[in-house]
Amino acid sequence: MPFDYAPAPESRSIVDIKASYGLFIGGEFTDATGGTPFKTISPSSEEVLAEVSEAGPSDVDRAVKAARQAFNGVWSRVGPAERGKYLYRIARIVQERARELAVLESLDNGKPIRESRDVDVPTAAAHFFYYAGWADKLDYAGLGPAPRPLGVAGQIIPWNFPLLMLAWKIAPALATGNTVVLKPAETTPLTALLFAEICQQADLPPGVVNIITGAGDTGQTLVEHPDVDKIAFTGSTDVGKSIQRTIAGTRKRLTLELGGKAANVVFDDAPIDQAVEGIVNGIFFNQGHVCCAGSRLLVQESVAEAVLDRLKRRLSTLRLGDPLDKNTDIGAINSPVQLAKIHELSDAGDAEGAQRWQPQCQLPERGYWYPPTLFTGVSQSHRIAREEIFGPVLSVLTFRTPDEAVAKANNSPYGLSAGVWTEKGSRILWMAQQLRAGVVWANTFNRFDPASPFGGYKESGFGREGGRHGLEAYLAQGNETMGPAKVTAEEPRDG
Ligand code: NAP
Ligand code: MG
Image 1 (cartoon, protein in one colour):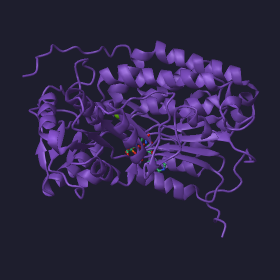
Image 2 (cartoon, rainbow, N blue to C red; image 1 turned 90 degrees about the vertical axis):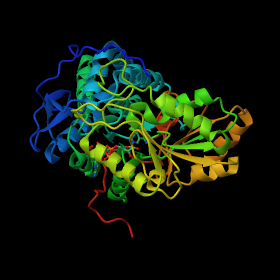
Image 3 (tube, helix red, strand yellow; image 1 turned 60 degrees about the horizontal axis):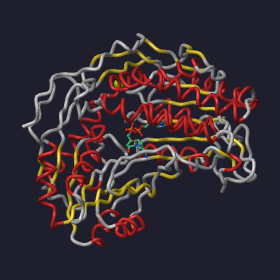
Image 4 (cartoon, helix red, strand yellow; image 1 turned 45 degrees about the horizontal axis):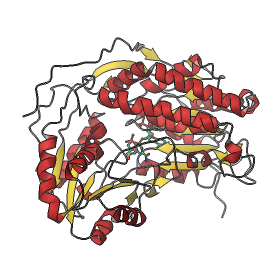
């Protein structure tokens, strides 16, 4: 039986949530001129946290103009070392306001405070520190002599790691001398709006960072805007494909970080207790709302029973509940829409003949919740083995030989990440060469470091974020021209 833990809630008094928020354009919060305001809620309690503006087409246009003006003006006069200083300053303020950011993130997103406090916010600060260091060393990045910024970057991010995805987008863009217009997800705008305050506090020149809130329509308007030089998108594969279609034939640059269905491969010589912790971290971290989640467990047949026994025992000790409680392992599902998707796919697992197992778990009455779940007897044709569930649901498959493990792991339209658990270094290297995945973790999972590039193959997208590679997406190459886009999305493509 798990221990009874006394509640240890983090105080929310540190955050000062306003009743309503405008758009952050040209260094100031301004009222939206188009669009209908919407509410953001706390998914663990369904409490309304704030009303947020919806940026309409004229607001998107204002934001892009502000970014263009800053790019042509003040930001181009700020030298590389000075740009670095702004980024260091932002990084330090993120650290200073870490508790505030963590509490706000957990309220708006539903993720456990343990994760926002120990992973999201420190890793976001680390990204700003890392790219601050690059700002005055771009000539030595191996990307050609005197690399130039692209101009205005339109950036669109999802709700699963709101502040961290913002950092992945904004830090490299600013370090390379671009200006940005960023749209956070509709259900999690609050840490991006607090970040706007941090930009003011850091005295960042007006227009260098613009934050516009809204839903998919706002994102689409930003993608279509003719004066955006680059789109950086993180989100679902479907929306990524539609963005790629929209900007085809224009000179806009594009990077896409999309979905995943990662295999976490456990060999018979793996240290089983460590592997079990890695499996849990791989799929139950952040309620499984993780693009690189280890959502397919491939376990060697000879140790499958032992691994599953220990895994079930471990899952019985996970605590689900209040995201602000420091004991909580599993928080709330971000939205009713996402919860419905998890139900739909899990029900398909039952219907297709897989066996569902869930620990005893009391779900709170209010809010959106799903218990940690595993399915055994899963075959490769099952929907739960092919489609991204994006929730705390693990599909377990077995294999007998390393070749079979590789074939099954690669049998996916996605290719974002993978995990390998084995004692043999040679097998790790062999697997890393065979697996079509942008990131392969060995004897660990879901580890992030700003110095390490991250990105996908196949339908998981293209382009890399993080590390030296992350600079490339924001720098003009060779004789690529800069300045306002000359071809609009509406114009026909050549030929
Ligand atoms: P999503 O529906 O694609 O949304 C992502 C962002 O795009 C949101 O800000 C969304 O706005 C906006 N958007 C929606 N429709 C748009 C359109 N037609 N044009 C432009 N923007 C549009 O994805 P999600 O459900 O929020 O996020 C989950 C997905 O993200 C998963 O598939 C996950 O694997 C992926 N993800 C990938 C990575 C990675 O690095 N590869 C990291 C995290 C998540 P609203 O939400 O406000 O409607
Ligand atoms: Mg919310």
